[in-house]
Structures are given as C-alpha cells and as structure tokens.
Length: 212
Image (cartoon, rainbow, N blue to C red; front, side):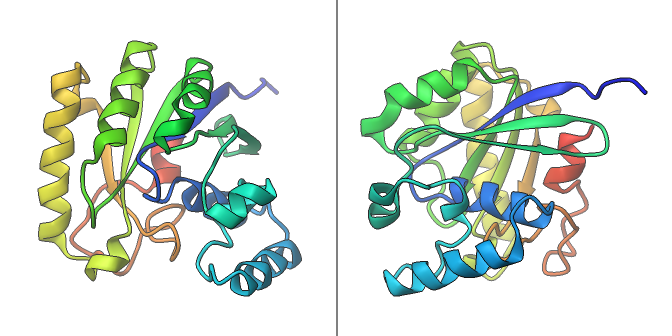
C-alpha cells in the first residue's frame, strides 16, 4: 500500500481566538487524546479557574502557558486522516512570541487561520496571514471560530467572512480557493462532523477540507 502524503499544518491567528482549543478538540475527536487525559485536563483547568481551557491544554503543556492561557513555544502533535498524515504546529498568537510563530510557519505546507467571529480581524490576524503568504504557505483554510458565542448567527459569520476575504485578497491569496468555515472549537461544531447548529452552512467541515 502506498504511503500517505505527509503534510505539515500550522494553526495561526490572533491571541485568544481559539487556535489551541481547535487543535486540542480535533486531536481529541480523532482519538489521539485518551478520555482519562481529557478528564484530568478539565479538572485541572477548573481548579485554575479556566474552565473552558481543557482542549487548549492538549497543546499548551508548559505550566507557564497554562497559567497565562497562552501558547508560548511551538507545540507539535501528529494525526492521520483517511488520505494524509499530518504534523500539527500550534503557533503562538501573542505579539511577543512572533519570532516563534515565524519558525513554525516556515516549516508549514498549509495553514489554518483561526479568527474569532466575536472579535473579527485583529492585528495578529493580519500579521500572521501576511507572514504565512510571505513564507510561501499558499494553502490556507480559515475557521471563523466561537460561533457559539454569537448564537450561531449567519449574519455575523457573513460580516467577518467578508472582512477576512478582503484582507486575504489584499495579501495575494486566491479567495475562491480558500474554504471559510464557521466553527465552535470548544463545542466541536464543523471540525469533524457537520454542525446541526448551523444548517445555513452548506460547505465542508475542517476534516473534509484537510482531506480534499
């Protein structure tokens, strides 16, 4: 049997827009994180008063990161789909850590840009998208995340989708080649399976896009 292609995938975007949670939830749903480990993360997160951070902790393993709720270093995890092997890099979103982010992106074949639909395009959204393009990462997927926080409102999605499309076009991305997916990483909407909360969205899930 032929070897599956190997793809280096980097998750980029502004701080607190849900990159680490997206990666953690994806790995958990693909069976890469045992149930008892997830339970432990949830208990620890609640103890620290960060009750929704358990998925992020799959990647944010440094104690300092957990306490600050930030991704400082570059974390790597592997998973496979029906078609491909992936190595995921979760790049830091905070401006102080942009040097680390450049290291992560320069090794990437494709990038997932995570944008909070609540906050829309932010400074690091622009910076990371520009860096990805400059470094030759032409395959891009956009997740408009935290849809649960806006009650899965299609008009909110469309507004941010328009903003991000304009940004990516101005950087030189071909917007008709990019899937822009409404997600809630914490709830798992549209990562692996189609979300029943957004019947108005007819496009692919993140997993379907990764295997295109």
